[in-house]
Amino acid sequence: MVAPEMKTSLFTETWMNGPNDFDSECSSKYTVNNIESLNVDGNQFKNSKDHSKWAISVDEKEPLLCIGDINRQKSQMKRGGGTVCILNDRLWGLYNKTIVNVQPCQIN
Image (cartoon, rainbow, N blue to C red):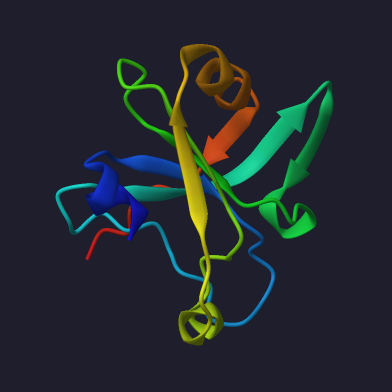
C-alpha cells in the first residue's frame, strides 16, 4: 500500500518469523523487497530477530524513510495499521547503511 501511494520502490524491514510471510513483490510498477539481514554497529541479525517495521526508498535521489506498525505477513491483512513517511537524505542514509541483504524477486 505504501509503495504505490508514495510512487516509489521500497526496501522493507519487518518481523518475518511467522506463517505466510510475504515474499518480495516485484510484479507491480513499484517493487517492495524484503530486507533479510541488517548490521547495526557491528551486530548482524536477520529480520526474524528484529521486530522493527520500516522502509526506505530504493532510489537515493528520493530519500524516503517510512516507519510503520504492521508486518508483511498474510495474518496482518485483517488488522489496521499506520505508516509515517519523511523525505530526509540523512535519515535515509543512516537506515540504508544498515542493510546487508535484500530478498530478490522470485522468478516464475
